[in-house]
Image (cartoon, rainbow, N blue to C red; front, side):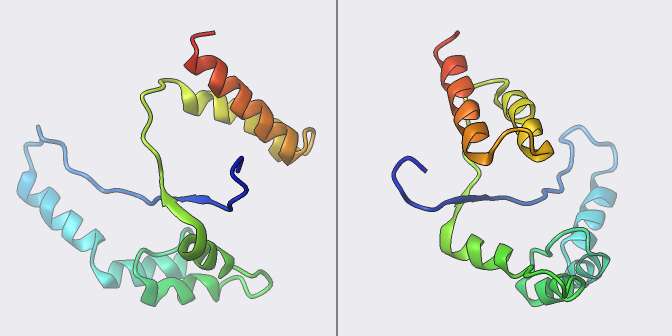
Length: 127
C-alpha cells in the first residue's frame, strides 16, 4: 500500500431474500439452515471456502495439508479490512481486466497493481 502498511480485504458470501418474494417463510427457513453451525461444518468439509464459523475453519484447512492454508485466517486477523464500498461504477471490470495478465504471469504483481491503480484513478477523474 502507498502508506507502507500491509492490508487485505476481507469479505464473504451473503445469503439474502428478495423483498418481493412470494415465499418469505420458506426463504427464511432456508437462510436459517444455511447459517446454522452444522451447515458451516459441512461447507468446510467440501473445501470450497473457509467457513464463517471459526470452529470449522480447521476442517477446511485440514483438506490441504500441503499448503499453509492458515495464512488466510492469520492475514485476515492481522491486516483485514471490510471490502470498501465505492461510488465508482465499473471498477470491478477494470480490476478483472488488469488482473488477468497478473494471473497469467505476463505482468508482474507490482506492475499490474500499478496499472490497476492508474486505470481506477483515470476512471475516477472521468478519463
